[in-house]
Length: 204
Image 1 (tube, rainbow, N blue to C red):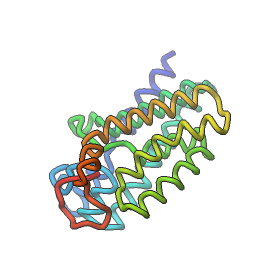
Image 2: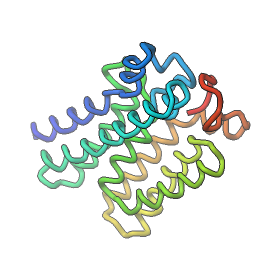
Image 3: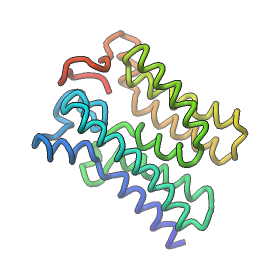
Image 4: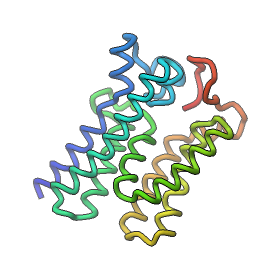
């Protein structure tokens, strides 16, 4: 039991490491949450700092999700629910990081890392669909929501374990809750597009 508690807490603390905040502070000496959309994630990093830092943030945030699932597998003795809990803990940490006064990002990159580790093919197909949507519309938030919505669909189509279906539904719900302001802006036609001016105060 102690090992399992340690695994979940460690995953949350790992998820709480906001690379967007750290890299923005290191590269430009700023708090990324006070610039652009105010979101501590890869998309806002792209708008404020450019492609290199954004790529680094994205990859590191994905890696957090992968590492959390590995922690769950290692300390959970193969228990699927432990890997699920650790993955969810990492996403929770990214969204509400204890190290940064509980003001973090929206968790999509970390969710990708978690789901790609737990259910690679569903994540791959959902990811391809999301990339296509972003390429066509230039709305990263819309692509993120498409990924979140399609994950449980593909998990079900591939006939994967029930635990993974519930996980995909939960992280999907997380994504929609965190993107609720983006959903309103998309409906109003006010959402910021990828490639827009740096520092525009809305969007991902």
